[in-house]
Length: 324
Length: 250
Image 1 (cartoon, chains in turn red, blue):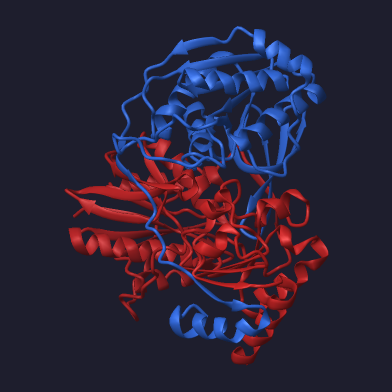
Image 2 (cartoon, rainbow over the protein chains, first blue to last red; image 1 turned 90 degrees about the horizontal axis):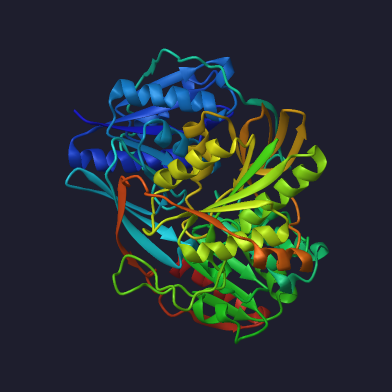
């Protein structure tokens, strides 16, 4: 029986939706090929939290639980996962292309002398080989790639694949695995979360982004209020970040983050090619712009020609009306 | 101490990308190439470290075709001491084989601090830095927005979802650089003159056989024609209705 091994990412004992998406996708591939889905959970004090992975389709759950594994450390996590990959003789390794997944997966690929494809938006099996689609030039074109290595390795872009509880109520108990040496040349001194519950653009289902038209950092409260009413993350264009109005972690575009939320609302920005590349994978795009000739107005699914300072607060009020 | 910077020449962010007739590569004829923007942070950080730590020299290494020499000249113009082109004929889409060639060269230079951009904006794979860590068996900290070097001790802040992680390690090590780390300097006139005259050493490399292959390229699916809902605040209720009932996204 062949094995698809999945990294199930957790933070503070909470498994991430992005990880459920990968487990769900692995389940689909396994159902086609008759493979087993094995999820690897790494952390500290998470033993009673792993059950949910079975509901998303994991046949087995391998648990590495140790105080030393509380925070993500690239070297210890890599050693644990590589040991699990060797033990299970997994033919396919899947990750989510989150910050952690992007840092971890290439180390594992190099350690196992295998190539990998990152940030995939499509995945399938053909003759036992992984076939994936991934963006190049931040999505200006897409590459169709056949992965040949052993193991075959890919990371999947968050928010693209559905997280499906295909085995609701299924109870899979975690198997503790023996831990490799947990020494590391890197130590984590501190983890600072900004503003507690700030939602990152790469993980958000809705993003409200402000551009040059917002005219200054002091006006971003209008954008933030709309975002808040929608439980959305706040994004920024390169112009807004380069002007120092917003932190660079909020930047969407080819030199920022590439995102694919359900809804992307762009306010006061033209939709330059490098920005469009970063958000054109969004399921629905809304533009608010004074200039009806801005490129974004032809490309957005819905647009309103108007001053964002007038339109956006009314949107916030309308959203609040139906959400209450 | 020697510092190595790995950089990559990439199409400009404003470039329109056209697929070539082989359907597997892009048509480079109308493309303006630049130094990968994230690699500029790596160059700047290397130059700053050289100044603050009294490092011996900064060497920039790139892997690519002949045109990539222009990227190395930009690095020289910014103040990098030595450059080397690892010349390839094949356009590799495989980070592991690229990382293997770079690792071999880095080893040869004896560099103790290796800096590179957190990703190249062409393939956006974010693989080479962490792969070098495995190949060279030295630590790598990715997506770094703040770096402090004190003797051989290295403290770095790295961007994570909704926060910052502070990590510590020792040299030799690899750092991948994120926007925010510094403000890359503009080349000086003197630097540009030097760069013009600089002899760029090149070494032909054969890339390891890739374990993945691009079978074809395609354009994104064109989105269906959008609609202008209306003008000004009066259009808002209709927009909200469309988002709820037609697009079903809120």
